[in-house]
Image (cartoon, rainbow, N blue to C red):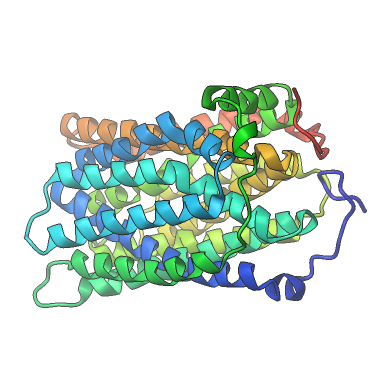
Length: 432
């Protein structure tokens, strides 16, 4: 049976991929690093919401989203112009420095909101270059026929850490004297978690830049080539439309989760509750990754993607109306599963439709959705803050989160027929 991208189908041989030493080292090192990042994000968002409320979460999301929107295409173009291993080493080194800055600030007492926002903004800048470089590195380590499976396997590692990272973060926040949460321990663990990945990078394959220096077009020309390619590929455009809906209206639920816990009258507003819900989202994401691997050779993937986005909207509605931790955890699990399945399968299919020399730019265009997600989450958080002051007897979170989910539901239904007719064929070379 041919693969969804039109390439000859090959057995998904996990053992053969695991024997690929560079990929195996990269996978294990990222597993440890992502565990630290997950604990870090949990600690930073809880520190923000307990100190500055929904308004603080809004500024935190905005700080990350602005550089994501402004710099993604530059990050993708840079990934296609210089050796990716070199770029990845620089981005990881920069992330260690920002992690150290936040760790040192917590030892001095109360962390000001401007510093939290500045650290998140710095991470947004770095991530604009790190994400396409990291994704494209996998393309250099594995044969093209195993690329979709390798990307899905990498996603499994990310979602495993999303299960255990928040739980570990909750434990670290509980260590120490007194009833207060100890975010500095989670920040310290995050700094240490970078060390295996930094040690792994020099052992990755030494590949030249995708385009030789003397053949590189001007940066703006390179960006225009990527945008032009996407514009002339109907399947890519449709996948990007669905991705934008999910990122803009669905995935902000994770950013709003600490507000849900902190302001909920029926839940125990404590970092342990927040950690439990984040772990439920991560467990759902792990299941979504495994479903993505299992569906890699299936037919009618367009319908599967639309169905996952629809499931995400329903799960968010259930979460917003939850009154007990058990129902909230189940809803968070379902939202995590549908969200990750949709994202991973969408990204893997876009990579399969894109020539190697354009992958960095197309990945960056797709990752513009991170900026959309951050802006949407910031607007939703600020709306909750303002409505909470004006609607004393109403649940502002429920109103705002339900409005996002219902809009996502309507958008997916509008795209349902085009997604059902989606045809996926590999593109061996870039379009002019």
